[in-house]
Image (cartoon, rainbow, N blue to C red; front, side):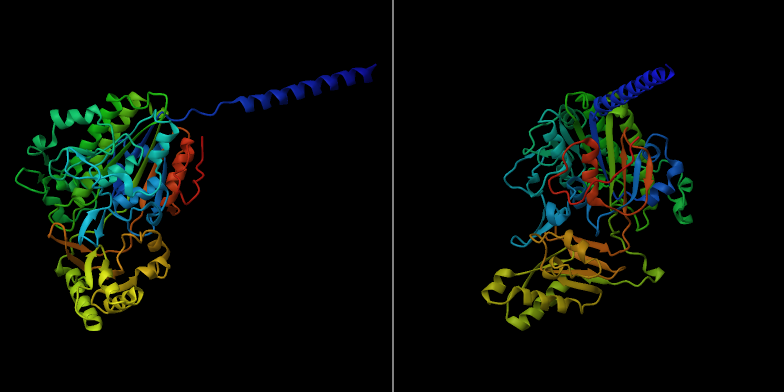
Length: 540
């Protein structure tokens, strides 16, 4: 009898256990995934540096950079391979591909036929809106995060971008974006290209009701605090607060404004109008808003030490970010939003250290280098204009003349590089053939992937650190000076998502991994040329 009872009990326990396992399995199978974010906000910050964020952490409010540090994932050592300017860095972040694949090596490239500098996105087939400039995303050879967000929603969701520069705004919007707006250098209006079909009402209202040119005369940029309250300033800087104006008699006032702290407030104002006025994040598909800010050294700073302006810019941007996040939370909810903020590498200073410090230095004149190389090639091959241009370390040869003389282009390049390496201040000279073969110096692999053969010069020159490169812009005929500095500072990336645990990751991260990581977290396709897999970040 007892044996029979034990059998019945065991049978019932087995039944209960099986039923429990089945229930757990069914629950696991039917548990719905967390909903995707309603609004994606992508932010690029030109010149953002991790060391400045750490220096000023105690000065930030709780809701800007500190929110990103506290609640987000911080990747504080994102590597772009070589120095790339903001447009090229933006293209790498949004495409997940290097410049050699995405087609964007720099903001400006040299047109060897017209012997002039031009925007990488110049497109004469388009028409400017609020501007005479004609641009399109045609030069971007691959899809971007913005494209993939728009495609994922079947065109129902919207993708907008706002940036001070045309090139970054268009790269942020991609091929499929609804609109891309930037500040025109001549008129100060928020401008776009007819490639994009939308002109959002908030931007129209700003251009007509509150145009920047009407407000700029009365705008003055002064420090938020007394100079002696900013950290790590030398004594002489603590007694001279800056005051920068943007008055109508300055032909460069709009260009200068675009590198100043107040431009970030202008971008934030428009972003808030977009989010609230266009009700972003409230539709049936993901909406995306892309923005660009700057903390790069101010173009009109009085001397090479612009730390006071730079720190003030960080503090003001912290306030702007807090206001942006508050608008997102009030309209959509931060718990329903996905935010990623990426810095671009800080540009080298265009001001040389004062001679009194005795730092070894010199001048490398691009015009002189072209002239001497041309004389050398004439002595070898006869009269003619053998060298046609210089741009950003690249020298361009006259391929038509070389062809007319039935000469070997590769051999002429090698001769030119051999001549240039012997010039004062030149530490390296490589042919484009060397670069494409990955044989150009210690950083050959990174240089190769960040070089676009179609727009590159025939010989690439590297100048000694501390030396000043002097060049006359072929388009504006203005002299330009840039001081060479190596030891690039990497840029941080923040990802703020309700699904992710906060973390700080300090090991080097390849910039090309950001796009696939964002795509994976959004559960959309990666851009079609993404070269690396997504990072595996810890979820809650």
